[in-house]
Image (cartoon, rainbow, N blue to C red; front, side, top):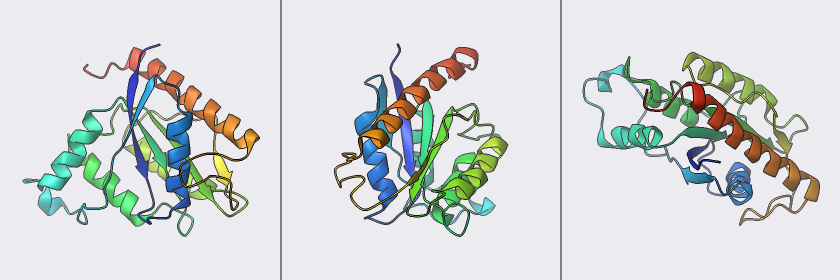
Length: 190
């Protein structure tokens, strides 16, 4: 199969985020045909349409990073039954100014982890709604709401539970197939 570049977003800005650990695990478990690169957004200012006529360099670089990938993976916690404000701000930057939505036609997948029993289910539904509006084709299955328990994922991304490791590996294999399928009908350069 063809190699695809995937940009991933870690929704939490916390240095010791369990979602950052999950992202490291997903990079480790991704099939070799997925070239994984983190797209960082911590330095973006709060979005305002006042910037639309002249995007700051950090925002231009952010949009260029999204343009350079074939698909995007969101690895995010749930804050107050939604997504972190910083991630929403990044999506706002990516989708503006009008007519230059970087997420349009970009295959996407959503995953997250939380200590709670329902993982990040409600926050993911909010994110899916936003991505729908941004015209980003989404991998709807398998859904992935990971309940994080101490020691589940080491700091280097090694998954200590065999069942969880197999599930995450399958999730990344399915994402690779999904990207290829979407790009076969919505070519990147069309």
